[in-house]
Length: 173
Image (cartoon, rainbow, N blue to C red; front, side, top):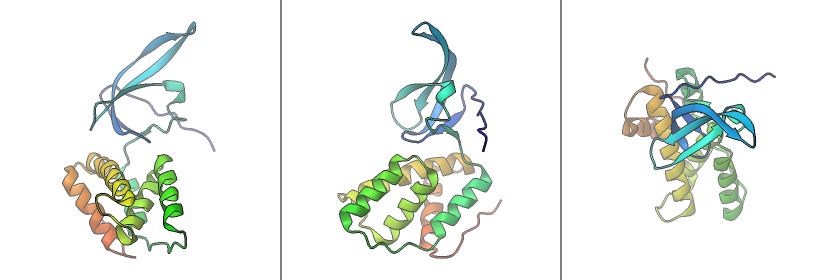
């Protein structure tokens, strides 16, 4: 399998696996330990956070483009898929969800949302509730950017899809 290098453009929004949507604010060279390296400067869309990633390590860091319309349909299928009955105890299930969320993998994010919404404790103070809010925020922002809708509408699409157990919700074009 070969790696496709993503071209970065100042002003575009990309997805960081840990911090969600980030805007590319500058692409430039820096002298680090005597070596000139191209860096991508990023600024979080929803919080005050700035970071720089060497362009050569952008793919390794999990930086990726916003999901395409086809990719959104695939993610909706994951959200609508039947749940997996877990035989794990509460603490192991929480640890599994945390590892999935830390991975930055958008499919894992969808899995965690689906499982907590259907079977978990989404009370505000619960560990699952906190994970659900974080995961929903990240995914709904990406959906809103990809589908060009507001964040509340994107969240409603996600919640409606998760509620359609075993079925698939197709978005109109």
